[in-house]
Length: 412
Image 1 (tube, one colour):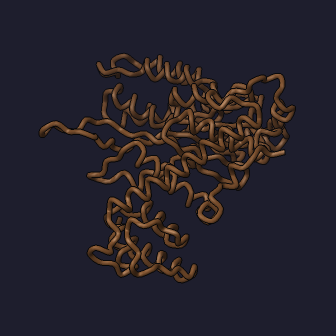
Image 2 (cartoon, helix red, strand yellow):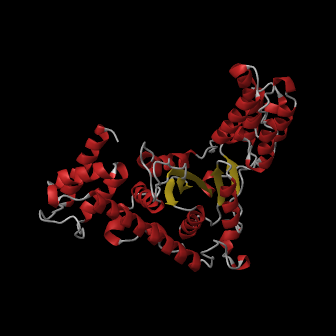
Image 3 (cartoon, rainbow, N blue to C red):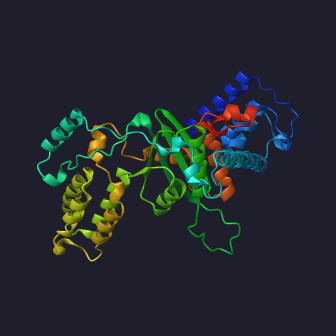
């Protein structure tokens, strides 16, 4: 955390104290229970922005505490962990209530009886109609492409109407794992603590969920969708990086409702770059020519032609570390998840999971990914949960009412 950001946070914390009229008793001991809501808010916010050491130093300076009256680092760290755990327990408990109220199994996320589901879950919004202006858009695009394999081929528009669609982006992010025991001078193993982050978007509304474990986050996402009626006459579109565990959890949790999975364009492009870099002889220029052609084919969703193009490459061009066959298999496996990115882009529809990538950065990476930092599972998840609380602007309601309005009950 830079000095400028630390100063900004100190100023913000001071403003919160003044605006809330917080009165901290001078003789307040560090292990006493904290009752001031404004102090709790600023203490939690500081923990998600600064290291625990810097946060404690800042809080003690603001409270003019020194020596035996100062807040201790361990006490403050435990306070942050307990606060995050309370949030986690609340979300888990209310996820269970919402799912049970809607007749879903909390352990699996599946409905007890799909035939008995409310009728609203069986209908989805209509796909985008094949209007004349769309045909004109396609004709204009194809006119700019000389090769037929780089043109939009299909007349069947599997495109959603944004106003009738709920978008969900889910991804994992890992931070270094803190070992409980280290023998001698042996080096730490490269083990990570994983947090799952999900971002739900319905029109202009965004909500961020997080947790240590993908199944729990998927169940919480389902509960959120049920509580806000976002499965009612809605298309459900998932953006993923192609990870198998994400696709399996989607299929496991949302088998009762029609959905679409879209492979994020950035990750598709990145996969192509990595495989071609390991496969093509002749340097970067030769690789880039092949990559450019391949991406222009994939941009219009022409997966069979992309596989055909790679299969016609001259074997002389290929290195011993050839991964072309692996890349072709990747295209085939994700064929149903590779749309016509070009048409989606022209129609103003999203092709990227950048919402969850940004959320990963805000919820976890900015605070927990620094040199020398390592985390326990509960500590990392607790801080991520607190950060999500501030991102969703629910801190005031949580601190005053000990509840989150977004996890109340199933929408009528």
